[in-house]
Image (cartoon, rainbow, N blue to C red; front, side, top):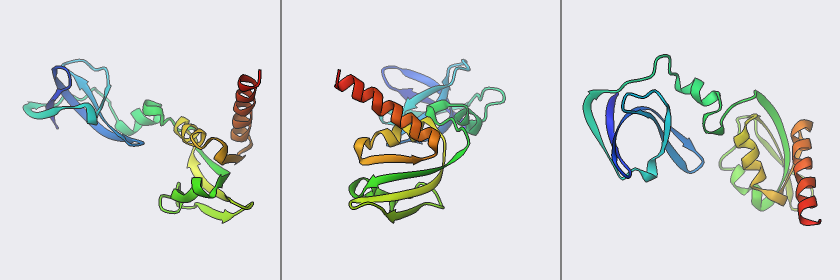
Length: 162
């Protein structure tokens, strides 16, 4: 890979290490100048980029997959879990087109709800995604994740009713 000049506020010589999609935002993972600090650049904020003739410098022993699995971008994995959750029909609509896993199963549940089962990575990203559904989701399994959501619901109830 060659160096890039990125134009945000100023032109910086960058050493690209990889590109990662997180939700709707795409990030360039890179270092700047001769530093080894790994930085993230939201691609939509880069006004221009120019490939330079100089080769890119990659920090010694850098591995993109390892970097991400160690928690970069909130993707740290704590293994796989068998997620079981109830979703309202509107909240689950996209899950037929974009399944969470190869073993995903969706079945009717209570009126207006479906039950989802899928083996997924246990990550902070998963929790953020699930929290985004608010009251349109009930986590059933694993018990530890259900407990986290129950505690959060109790905390929220206390905040709004005290």
